Length: 76
Length: 76
DNA sequence: CAATTAATTGTCAAAAATGACAATTTTATT
DNA sequence: AATAAAATTGTCATTTTTGACAATTAATTG
Image 1 (tube, rainbow over the protein chains, first blue to last red):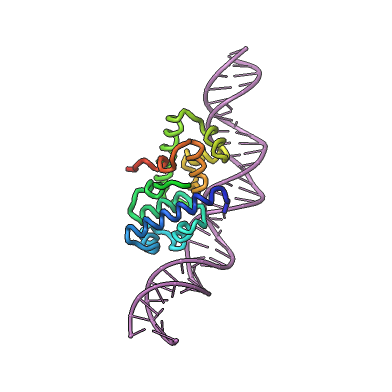
Image 2 (cartoon, helix red, strand yellow):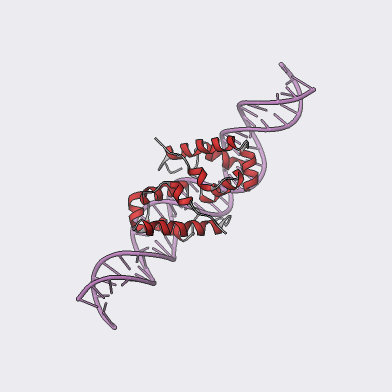
């Protein structure tokens, strides 16, 4: 992965994890509803990958939240 | 490109274009400030690619807007 | 309208993300 | 503690994005 903004990716993953918990879902639930691999969800949670827009939208779909919710946090 | 959600990518690009105009910037300005290639910005505007989170964040940086602004629109 | 500059797109190698399944680790149950 | 089930991570081939620069098209100026 291009380490352009690892800090942001980590924060993004933490926020995603919180949202999943708040929704009382599991990464598997999200993946199933979003039609992607479970591993992709974990990769994003862990900040391992700079996920593509397609995956991000799929996760929002699987989470049943508006995509902007995934970005509704601040760093530093 | 994986054609998982071309419709969304197109809408995302249109929204981005509007934001750039509103900010009275050019794709080149955004790219320069975000430290990415100008072509990347055009690719996203045109919905050609499912851009990575890194690129999306770089664009938000270059635009000087909060990343969630890039997702603040609805489809259909 | 020619010439110069700015804006946008093409190309392709290199790098990175995705998908599919296996493997491992963790958690729950007895 | 052992077993079974669930949750999380590893691997690697395939597909896709990114970066760098060239090439083209559009806009502006003289």
